Image (cartoon, rainbow, N blue to C red; front, side):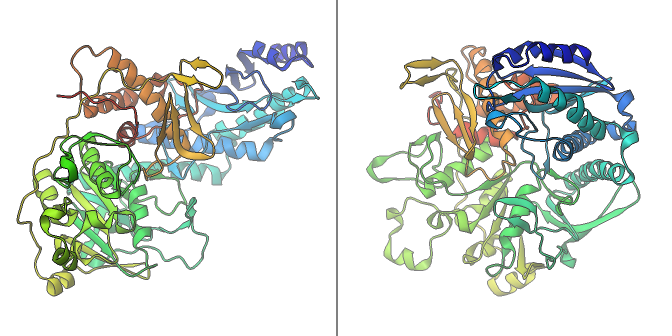
Length: 581
């Protein structure tokens, strides 16, 4: 600490850029502080990155909490949230010029994600955080006095409250155990689902409604009804600790969720979409688990499409435009939805979810009245309704539909659910009685290609600023005011329609995944590989070695995306180049 204090004093009231002299590591009682990235201007965005290191022996977090990868993820998630709580409790924020003099963490969702903000090795835990050192005065000189208060008093208090188990009160210890228990229980649910061919499980007493459309926290309304499974679909999962968890099982195949407006259909769908991730204790969806490959499909007018075979769904377009290698810079609702299905299957997903509110109606069905007006040869779209059973039987693609006005899909569903005032009922027998037996398809779905290969010159990160006549070798940034848009090189990648991105740091991680893929493509030689090959390979490497292999400019700011979101980003790059075979 004395070394740091003396160094701070030596650059007091000097030009702010001199804070770069702080690069290095410093010993504090119980921990070590290191500066990883230092920004030389007050209130810079991104700000500087620092890290604290605490030995596992000093931390004394019980070893039982590190027994598996899932448990370690839970501890890491708990620690970064605990650190965030410590900032709110102990730190005076924005004390300097231009908002400088603050601590921060990356944006945290309700999900437990694999992030590069908390890391473990055999000896220690490392936590990376965002820090903006303070400036003062008209010219913005370095405020060494406030910096010393930040580091010697506030950071010390935050670290003490975050990492040292013997200082936790009983409530905090119980909360840490809850984080770990959620992960352990969820892992057991996933194993059960695999053994019994289930695509989703929703535990009884789950609280599904959210605070608002832009706030994923639980609804504060006291009248929220807890979920309860229909008796016909309820299962009991025996857990290793002797407990049993009851809830609704959704089997592979075709499932329809119907009901009146405002009765909970979309709320159930949103919970299923979120069930690919673990949720923090108290979220209400801790034991809502959806198979990891679930992907939401919607219409997405205006997106680009590159050489996707949408011919099983759309063919014989006017002017002889082919659909086996369909390309568009301004896709329609129907062509975009067809491409989204094929791309998801190409990336490895075999569980697709649809909500009729976000679908192109003409892609879903053709009713009897329109058939009387339009001859079959005048309509290039083969509605999804006519292909769902083939997608399931031939390609083993399970689907879950939310339908409120399109009863056609009930005729094709293995399981039919009714949401009635947030109560879920199994109405499969009622549907079969009123609509007749399952309707199979007369013409099976034709085969379609899912093996597009990436050209080696993809994902150029260079950015040309024509106004300043300047070229940057790399531009990778998420947009502060558009949290689902990524600036990558000269491309603006719009991921607004990719529903299962949980938090902004995943967007940034996708950018660095693209950069890593560019390097691999350059080294791949003359035999281009498929999109599936590259995303699987990169996912395996990240799972083995961590997000640090992406070498971000600001370590500690990434959250792991799924390979399906990475594939979605690749497919929305307007400069994407596919090898013609």
